[in-house]
Image (cartoon, rainbow, N blue to C red):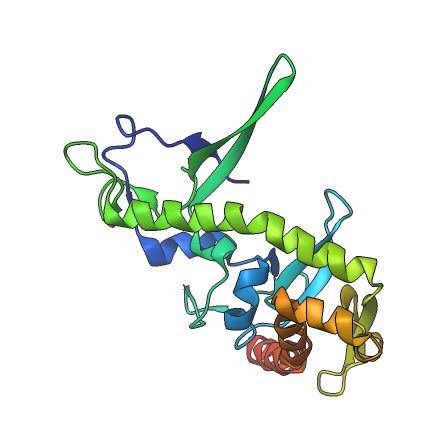
Length: 245
């Protein structure tokens, strides 16, 4: 579990982060939430689907990193092997914590930037500085904080995207079945995607509305990205054969 500490320019002035090493915290991550705005660039490398959050039960949009619950096929040779990287991976080792304060009838939602001090990339000997000698944020830290802001700002739009598809009853579960060598067929369930037949049956006005919001492009990109699942299944089989050898 991450050990999150609010960023402090005085207490953390001597901290550094070895950026590539920071992603090792995600080496066993097999799925992560993504934003609507990320979909067009991520589908080049990852399958993008929907699943239900284990915490809230709500539908969320996710990128998949493997076909085994304990396998991340994008973490190889002690590094993340992909040109495109989800924001939820890129932000490592930084997080945004939420503090809800109620003052009478008014409620405020404060966002606090935190660092995971248990991330193996966080130390004081080498890597990117967080603050300069005057306590100013370094370019590296500003970039990471901008990534956190992008995640926070894109959350509402992504929720609206999912809610709109749900309201049109366009989201359906699907099951992937594949065989690795001579082994018994394996099945992956718990994933959902867009029902393409129902999508094609929508009236022109609804399709135009989806298109004007940028949803239609994201939908077809997600549908095309599911072909990566078979690629990941083959890669998983090769990894297992290599391990067995």
